[in-house]
Image (cartoon, rainbow, N blue to C red; front, side):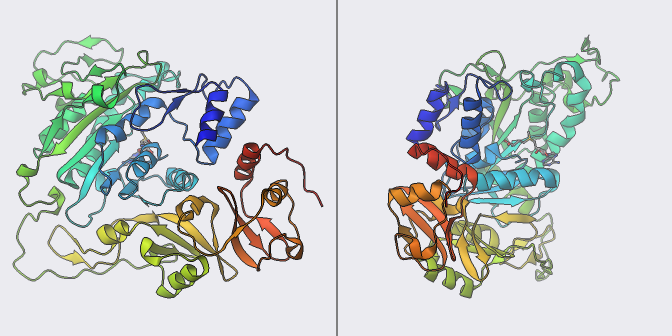
Length: 512
Ligand SMILES: C[S@@+](CC[C@H](N)C(=O)[O-])C[C@H]1O[C@@H](n2cnc3c(N)ncnc32)[C@H](O)[C@@H]1O
């Protein structure tokens, strides 16, 4: 950590004063104009090895506004590439994040960011956010809906938006934004909180969506975001309740009682006074403008599912419309295929635990093909084991994630390599304090030699070592290694480079 700070400082990084929830830095250059190759390489190295996550500063606001409690089940409905989902996972290490993304290509980005950061308390699922599957009662404790949007607050980075934006862009996204948020609100348990955010400043995509959601979901209430407490010294503005109707030339069209005939414009996009409705407290929401803090812009709203409005104590989608006047039926489980994640067999868990000296009760164990993933036990207890009811009152049996379409569970930690369960580099931090076997202490001379690219014969290795998968340890440094005729590091080039930099080793091509 100290080394990462030093690296950031050496290339001009400064701590962001308004971000007190987690350590955040701002760099004096953008991704497009690095001052030097050294700065470019350092940023890439720190990011790719999971020591930092590069992102737009204001994109960190929504997870902080949600204020999740450790142990919560939090859903991110529009999660890729995963800046907010990973931020949430790190904020609640004993909780679980259900990260959803409909697009397969972007889902892979989400999975690689989870791996890069070694996160084990995340499940990745694939649904259209408007139709996220049913889940066990009582529903999720918190949600972030970081909706697809026009991106009008990203004009500092995306200059071409100035030219391509017209008022109908926001209008074309409004219904999708409202429908994704509506589904999230239906899965939120009473007492739970939901954040809606966009990187747009168009009120049609923001305040108008919030008004629509409050009308569609009478169980929700808008909560005032305490921005002074959460983000001291951040310059922000309060949400507005009066916005104009714009034509395609972005000219104001006077409202005279009739909805003007403009592409995509509907009544629920009008401001509260035009709709003759009492304005909700839109000043509870916040807007951050691009020019105020030398950042991008953002809009954030916070809702709560008022517990007294749902005495059933469960998310709205779980309340039966009509009581069943027969016994509930057990529904057929979805068929499994080789990509389905299933609990790892007892035999596999016992074998891995005995090789690596792990306590099996520390984790929930999952298997997908030749990989074993670890997560916390809450994934099993809250999402896998319980039965799930459908809207008629019948149920899918427990011990299955169905009807959630879960693609990845937890962190890939072991891979079956020719019958040997080897550890994976991205899981080292998860295992660091829990391994009781399979760790071989080496001296710094040996470590330096390996990092220089040497792969000594097993008989010449300074410490006696068996064949198979081991973790070499020197001080605080852990290095996975594969031992056959030679001792070879199983680390990617970026991670080796970080260690070489930390230790001040000049890289030389493989020595014999
Ligand atoms: C603003 S981005 C999310 C950024 C992400 N929250 C982060 O912090 O890294 C919006 C995401 O919504 C996804 N999306 C598009 N249509 C969607 C839908 N119908 N349901 C859920 N997500 C959708 C997009 O693919 C995109 O990944």
